[in-house]
Image (cartoon, rainbow, N blue to C red):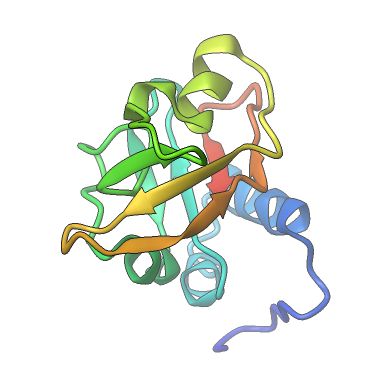
Length: 138
């Protein structure tokens, strides 16, 4: 890792706090460290439009999200843990934003564009904050 951030002792919630603080203060020097985290981390604005994602999101989802365009999630397709289709506007990030509450402990299955499933998403955190940035980890 380029910077001073060490991930071995950092929980997903701490990662989200670090990301929010950095994004809130526009600390561009921290963004490269967030990009190198082994945890898929992305941020949306208050309308659910993705504004930041790290490299792990690309590895996880099998696609490059389009910041400023993609909404709610970085994945291609989502399914419930029972295998039913899960529309992006009903995923945990969408619920967190639409209902203005934190969503934790939700499991979903992501499908990559090549048809392969990604590992199950155990939504570690979709945290809503009074700011315009809403971070999530996969």
